[in-house]
Length: 324
Image (tube, rainbow, N blue to C red; front, side):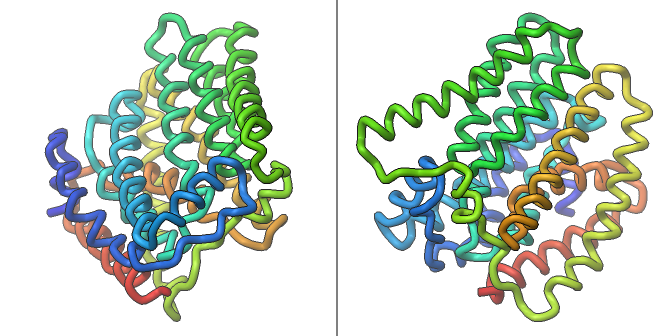
């Protein structure tokens, strides 16, 4: 039922987010906000905002989950990343975030994710042809904003360069402009920092200070989720490979750029794990949801997809309501 609804090309189905997101993330309204006082400037700004009221943190989490669900849906449909238009990310993104982030664990990496998705949207929009410098400068600015939430996101500049390399012929300006966008974001943040005389911040040291793990989970939760996610990811990769081979050149270019994004984010998460001892699940949750979309596009054996989503929904509720 749920998969069938969201597999369709009916934007109105996204109104179900008004029910799904509060139902999954209500415990965040009651949880204490994470400490972001030693993070990057935008993370500190969010930390200040959370201090205005106990409910503010949860309200921001609910709003960002809904925004991410819509962002990823628009990204997949407008860039033709999937085989056909659908709204499955509107269902899978909230489930992925609920499985990955328990109440009180939505830290800087999660807060910077909307900027990452927006940056990828601007970058991949150049596949339609025309001038690309404006879109690539916007992508650089957005990656800079994401890095001002969580410093490792600055490395995603490599994904922009990789995307440009597979989508367009070589032009050196198209590699320089995104870098300038990142520099402008950091320069403006440095200027505001000195004008307002805010507490000092060391970008590299904030990686350890602002990295937050998945939070507390119920006993047996990890292996139970693994029993569902491992087969799902395996099937998703097989389906993605199949669709990649069938696609025309433009579709293959976008999917190659997506592969670059997934590999980069997984590498970042592993490096952060080695440095801090904590795995930033928020970094890989959204790409995982996008990849899982390919497993649900087919209509054969539809009951398997419905049963899988039902299992994910039960596990998400289990995590959110009993994990902390």
